[in-house]
Image 1 (spheres, rainbow, N blue to C red):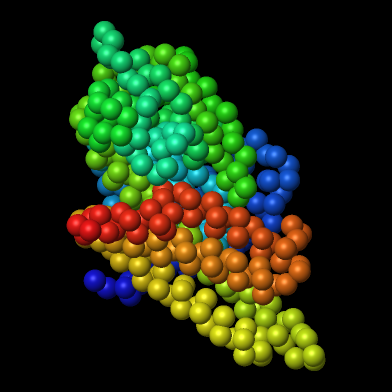
Image 2 (tube, rainbow, N blue to C red; image 1 turned 120 degrees about the vertical axis):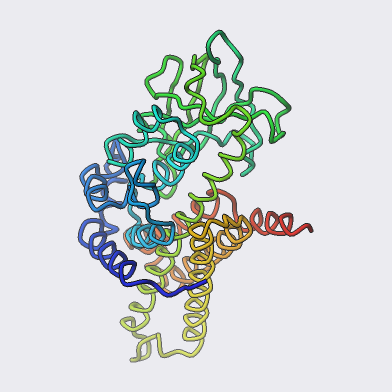
Length: 379
């Protein structure tokens, strides 16, 4: 498995970095937060991302994509992570879009996936419920059989990008007990459907999420994504791919926090010398660098495995466990090395520690993924 970027990948990484630097400084996130912006992101920036082809990267040409891979996705999300860009690329395309891409009907793809790839519509995956604690099989939302379809009833929590979505990919139980993997189906539900209500949640990292309720929502058999028995497998596959994309964002965030900290260590002086010359801080900075490089290797290994068709969930869990701990550790160190100013809201370094904590709890924290890795290995 090669970890060296190709010429095209290097060009993509440079383009992504340049675009995010020019279009999305961290100060933009502060303005959106302070204004309690209705959307929480910039439609203009997202439109330009679509024009650059970022939204189309992992999809087949038949679906309107570029037929590239998750190694390229990671390069883009890493650039977004450096800028703490709030645009809904991951929830719309790398999460909900992946479920549609893998099992959606031709009609579903034409009506929803193609416009989402073009940046014209937004999708969201509604799967997490109160008390589910990272387990996609912990589903209480019910899909009761009705003539020609189903009736959905339930509530989903922390739906990433949910309050702006044009449609939801919803997990619902058609049979079985609460934690059984069998009996789960995925449905494509327009946000405008009768009985669907969305309430925005204000997260600490200023990224959009919502509580979405389904009260007697009528759906047709044609709204099923794949077969009724495929829900859990499709859901797990979509979450795994989104996890890799998120790992790329986390890698970018920790890298930016590290670079800013190194710059501060060179600028801030005590006793007439830069504080970066103190041996204790040198050791801590070296440890931060090592953690970033270990995280990068784990993330690229997971992305390359998906692109190779192996879809190894163990590698994905290794990557998420690695970046969850590394991002939090590096963000903590960054704030501490900035001293008192790092604790103030006026300084941007604090935005990274908030994002690190939120990312850690998205799609499973380090402890969850270590346990998953062990279980996959038969322990």
